[in-house]
Length: 232
Image 1 (cartoon, one colour):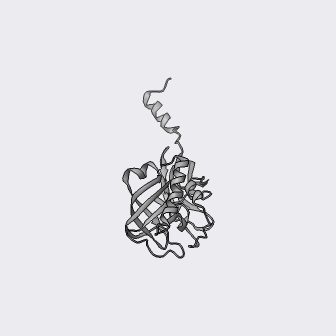
Image 2: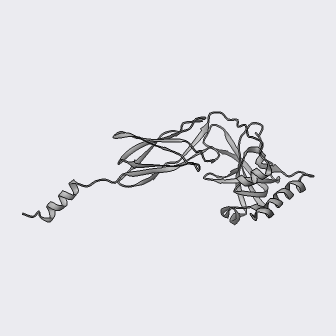
Image 3: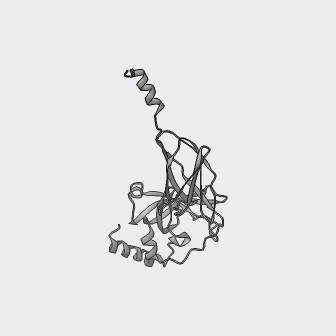
């Protein structure tokens, strides 16, 4: 005897196989810089841990996760582990979990970098004038300075920056840099675009104050680089 429609439906429901889920996201430092090599773990009560490592852009992806709540955390040597996040995975879903890791040591010993190196590493190179300053908590223990600046000249740009003609940039709270820039101050800044906004490419040296007698030399270097690379 052939089974009726209701029996067929009940049989299909009984043999349904749930599709695994995925958790993905990024791991960055307190200034929005990508953290490659960070270990991300997802642990659930019903199964063993799943593990992924962030790539060069700080991105990770945990696949084939079972349905349920997973405790997801990130860690990297030299940084404090993040607080675990409970992420609910449903049938075949893709969930997002991003992490900001705080350094164990506050001070960073930046190597000396040439203007040419800064140019190569930067998303945008601009001449700006500071119009407002303030403090901004980055999620770690200390506060950083945050500045609004009007763009006076573009040497190298990114599409999202050019449209606004104003930017918000962070001044990281490193050793010897405890005071905000002054309103009205002109500078050339070498910036990279991060998930948390524009940040300087390589520490304090990536923001060059324009002082009397120095303006011409600095501006000529970056203008020459812009002409040679066509990035203006």
